[in-house]
Amino acid sequence: MIKNPYNPTGPADPRYYADRDELLSIFRNNVKAVTVTKGITKPINLAVIGQWGMGKSSTLYKFKDILENETDGARIFSSYVSLKPSNCKNADTFFACILETLFRDYETTVPLPNKIIQFIKDESVRLNKWKLKKAGASIPEFERIEEDLSAINFKNTLLQFWTKLKESKFDMVVIMLDDLQYVLSQDNGEILYDLRTDMQSLSMKGALFTFVICTPENLFPHMRTVAEPFTRLFTQHELKPFDIRGTTEQILKPLDVEKIPLKLSKTAIKEIHEITNGHPYFISLAMKHFIDKIPEGTLSANKFEALYPDIMEYFAETKFNADFEKATETEKEILFKIVTLKEYEFSPKDVGGRSKISYVERLVSKGLITKINRGKYKIYTPLFADYLLLKTDEPAK
Ligand SMILES: Nc1ncnc2c1ncn2[C@@H]1O[C@H](COP(=O)(O)OP(=O)(O)O)[C@@H](O)[C@H]1O
Ligand SMILES: [Mg+2]
Image 1 (tube, rainbow, N blue to C red):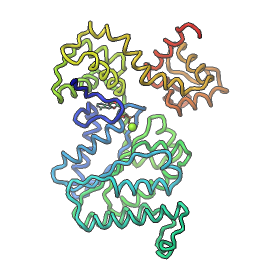
Image 2 (cartoon, helix red, strand yellow):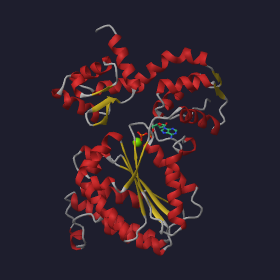
Image 3 (tube, protein in one colour):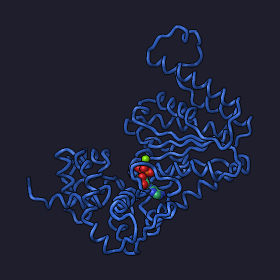
């Protein structure tokens, strides 16, 4: 059996997590400071921003792992919430989703005392009743219990929860919200105002919550205009493509951890860095492919050359063909236009002017184009541009 530890489809195994030292230190240091000073140092909130496949979810999994394994007896409650468009339809479904996940999928660094388990059970029942009521199921028995079931009270629930945790000597709570962009893609910016208000009151009441949010880079500027004060609550950190050091670490760590006897020459690593542009998803994808082809021995530059034509095809099959098919005919024309430009950075006037802006924006929402800043765009990865170029060379069908 050949071991192949590279898995581009899910978050990276925390043991393989490469690079991002600065971000990890910010997180580690703050958790440590908050827990050691018993909350005199306040928790910070982190916004991890980065393009598709840059490692946002992997980072949240790494944070979870840090909380589990590196916190030296601190008592921490944490939860990872993976948001979906359906959870972000309105403020109620959004906050219900967070609370539900918080009370169902949580991790703690110490066993939970019974009092807290009971609180979680009670809250889960309340949430369920609320959901049933929302769904229109008229169950008379529930109607009689007239608690505040009309809306989700996020702040009060968390505040009560914090009081219980504090009684049991908990040090802090970490709530991670992955893919927060779904709030904005449905034009529900006001959810962010609510979240901000609640985060601020929690903080003012001395509740020690850290919120970590993830969103693609191109949405953060937008978020600022929707909820400028919201973004101010966060320390922003952008995940950029790896430099050669990061790429090397991402390539070698799994081999090392799993003791796989494959050596890569420096040149081969450099080549992988160049074809992937240091994009973690594509590094992982390339390595998965190489290990399947050459499970052991040495991956020299020579062998690598021989595999090179395959890799573009492999990228196309696993990713770019599907990307391309997401575009409509007009959008495809725009994509082809972009790759004929000298620079891959462009503004709408380079592809036909104002009338094309809405198509460009749609390509952004499909993830094929990234907005760099006001009026400046680029193809989401130069690899996709290469793919498009190959396509333009194909004889017409
Ligand atoms: N720091 C990292 N170390 C190792 N692999 C990584 C890292 N970041 C990302 N990856 C790889 O890239 C892939 C995509 O990462 P993911 O966290 O899903 O990105 P995002 O959530 O930003 O879309 C993962 O499957 C993993 O293989
Ligand atoms: Mg993700």
